Structure formats: structure tokens, C-alpha cells
Image 1 (cartoon, one colour):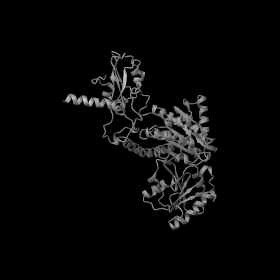
Image 2 (cartoon, chains in turn green, cyan):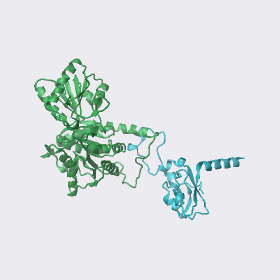
Image 3 (tube, chains in turn brown, blue):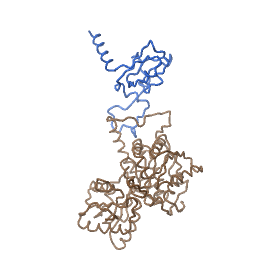
Image 4 (cartoon, one colour):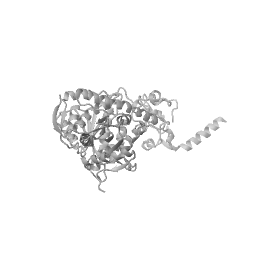
Length: 393
Length: 126
């Protein structure tokens, strides 16, 4: 049985890392994820883990070292946010293309400029096509649970892809919460020992990795990588189920909340889902058929599952905590809309861009979204597709 | 000069996927399951200047072999003497010529040498 302990999100990430005991952590601390690295570094210094902690001079180097250590055959973890993730950008693509199994916890924070240290999803959304899996946690418990599951998902032989464990900067990273921390032994047993498929340190069987790859093979290699996200989706489902069987908290690609008969539905990522759940309960008490679809796995994107889950919806609001500048939408909206279109679902969908740079999202604003959805459901046509929530006019 | 009969061991052993391999046949991660196949990628065509060795000046000090960034100087492992240049991979950077203590390696324009070779071949044909 786990123990209930009060912890901040960053502390819980460090705790998960201590229990997992990775071979290598190469990190360059950045707000709001700093504490996770700081606390973990103390575990290393105190000999509580066997991890080789590599102090690097930048996030670009951090990710380079992580990729190399992973391909060498190690279990590798790292933590970053915002500009740090942005500086890793070119290495992120390489991490996925070379099928490394790095697990990177990201305390989601706005990208500059202007410089801002608070939460939005523009950092991770900037890496959405890099080939990493992305799980979004709603609270400290989920950030902790996702960190453990991410290792198992990444290292599965039919997956072999790096995983980003996203948790909202400050809102989760710096919020104390009573969470269930599992026994060290139980966590170690759940993640098991890492069995790399072909470690570079096996010098008796050398091979060529990351070679020049031009028009004659690159296209096929990308086609091959494309295929990996199918088993990855299955892995997210199966590992989430196995985690539930072992620890009593099950996870899937999505978390439907009062969705079965819901007509007005909000789609959200991360901590905002928690606020929406409260509002859903309040409005349900008043007899309104409202619901929430929380997307836990943004990559792989569960398009078919989203279309299936929204069977009864008559109007949808997508909550976007990152603006897709120039696209006319946030970053989540086009994906949800495409999922519905591909699934043959004719539902009006409104995009709400909210909470940028840590702008607080208030319960009355969630009420406002449901209030604005009602006429959209009635007419079937939103007057305005993209709206900014909580912005001063 | 070059010993055309020489073939390095690496070239003989290197393997890669056949050019028509479909995506399902490729190992994950864009890897080449074998090592040591960069040798199959010929870079000799990039060359503007070709190293030409004057045998009378060469003292077999192996400086050219040590400094060559492309491992394009053949050396006989038994006799420890230079055999010539691997012109399939030599990019003509001229480092061998620059480090040669006796000035035994001359960098000649590839176009001039090719013209000479062509006219020699024509002469032989007549």
C-alpha cells in the first residue's frame, strides 16, 4: 500500500525518479521545474540512487547527453520547462527518430517573449510534432503516476519512443497536494529492469546509428517511425490499466467525465480539467447535461477515441492554453476538429484560448463557456469560432 | 602512385540495405544494423585537387597516413609502407601534401589529370 504524503508537483516528480532510480539524469534546471532537479540531485549526492548525474551547460547538451546515454543502453530521465524545452528542440526530434527511450518531465510554462515563468502549454505544443509521446497530468498525483508509467511505456519493445510527462507549471509543480506515494519496491517492480534492444555499449555487436540518410531512405525511415505510434497508443492504454490493477488508479488515453449523455462538452488538458470537473458537478446538480473530455494522451493523439467519446455532444468547447499564431486557432482545436471530421461527427466546435502566461482561469469563466455553448448547440452554428477567454477588452 | 589492385578489407565486408528495401524491412530508428559501412559512400567525386606522390621523395614516414582525415592513405600493415591513395574517398583536402616533410605529395588539378588520362587512353587506343 502507498502512503499519503503532502508534496509539491516537483517534489513528487523527484520522488518518482528516486524510486525509478534511472541510470543517467543529465539536466539543466529551469523554472518552474528547478526543484525536481534540485531535490533529485540531493538524492544523488546522498547516495540514495545509483544515478550518474551529469551537470551540463545547457538544455541542448542535456538532451544530447540523455539521447546518447539512452542509446548506450541506460534508463534516462530529465526535467525541464519552457525555454529549456525550446533549446532542446532539434535534439527532441533526434531523440524520437533514433528511438531513444528518454523520459522528460515538463513543468509547462509559457514561452518568451515577453519573458514569463508561469503556466501555459506553448512549450510542449511547440514540440508536438517531434515524435515524443505526451501525457498531460491534472494534478500532483497524476504527475507522479505518469512519471512512473512513462518509463514503462517508453521502454516497451514495441514502442521505444521518448515520453514527455507534462504537468502545469506552478499550478501543479508548486502546489502541495496530498498524494498516494507507492512503496519503493512496488514502483521498482512495476517499472522492472530496463532491457535495451541493442545498446551501443555492446561493443561486440557494433552498428550504425544516425547516419547520413538522404532521399533514397529517409522517406522509408519516417514511414517506419510513423507506424510506432499505433503500438504506443496500445501501450498507453495497457500500462494505464496495469497501473490501476497494481496501485488502484487506472489511466487511459482520455478521461471522460459525465460524458455518457452530455450535450455541452468541454475538452481540456492538464490542471484546468480539475476546475471544469467542479463546474460540471455543480451544473449537473441543476440538471444540465454538461460534461468534460480530458485528454491525457496528446501524443499519440486518440482521434478515433475522441470521436467515439463525443457521441451525444451537441456543442463542444476546446480549451487551448497555447495560441497557434497565424492558424486562427489554438493548438488543440485543429486536432479535435480533425478527429471529429474524420470520425464523421457533425458537431459545432468553439475554440477558447485561455490562461496564457499563467493567467488564472476562474470558475465563472468555465460557467461562461458552458453558457455560451448552449446557443451554439441550439443553432448548430457558432457565430465566432475562436474566442479569447478572460482577456481584457 | 596508386596500387589499383589493392582493396581494403572494410570495403569487402561492409553491408547495407538493398536500394529497393521497403520501409517494413528497415530496422527501427533509421539505423544500419551493421557497422563500418561509411566506406560504401564514395566521396572521391568531391575532389578538386588530387594528391600525386613522387615515389623518389617518399621516405615512408606515414605522416600522410596519420593526418588524413578520411583514412584514404593505404598502408601495408606488414611492411609499414604507404601503398597509395584511396581515390574513391579522398576529398582532395591536401593535408597530406601540407604535412609531408619531403614535399613528396603534389596536389594536381583533377580536371588536368583527367584530361591527361583521357588523351593517354586515346593514344593507347590508336
